[in-house]
Length: 72
Image 1 (tube, rainbow, N blue to C red):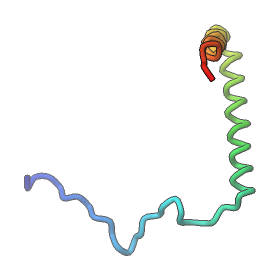
Image 2 (image 1 turned 90 degrees about the vertical axis):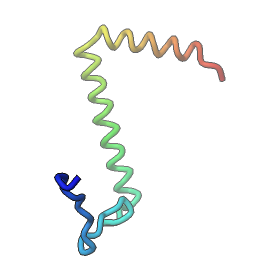
Image 3 (image 1 turned 90 degrees about the horizontal axis):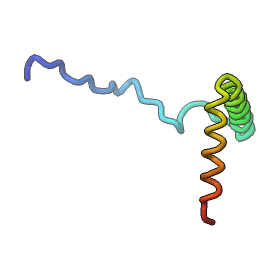
């Protein structure tokens, strides 16, 4: 196995950044970012439904069937 390159170990002078590290984000900023993401997602879904009406219709029917058979 001498032909294989050795794995590069993380350097101690370059600490890895985790999700908790970095600039602190306020709750309001997070909510604004999330709201913008959800608006973009809804817009993308509407566009897809306009471009592919047959697929949108079958998805609506499938969702309705799933909701009818759902047990509380």
